[in-house]
Image (tube, rainbow, N blue to C red; front, side, top):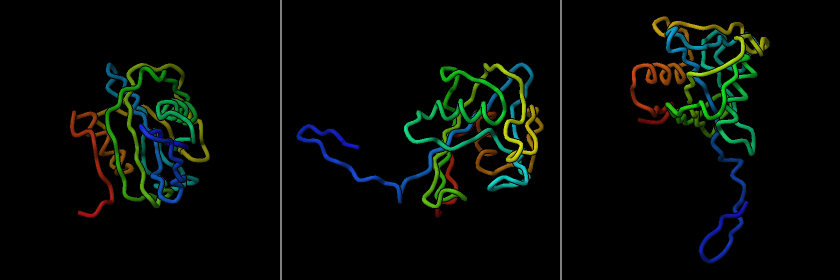
Length: 166
């Protein structure tokens, strides 16, 4: 990849060893029904087995983050959201994660319009996918995405940090 400057084009080395993992999460929020789509990580999940979470997944090389959000949401839940219906609501910057020893950046979107029927699209990874009342968010929840969800629902801060030294 090259970076264009006023004077010249400089080839940049790949940053694979220090790259921060880019992740997208989606809060599908039924405003009228006062509920959100959540999934419970199953016994085959790579981390946080048994905990609730937002639909979330890793960015593929060359994929815009909005497409990551739309793709992961559909794969995991069957719910379809148009990229233009996504609204940026939170960013999580983690110093390290299970699959991200060099850190991760989770871009959290909210959507109020969707289509499709809610299904467990990845039963090997998730034991349950459900609409959950905004007043009944489970305690057993992945801490980073729970903080983002609670912040979004309460119009709180739009950035949270995880595992960084104080």
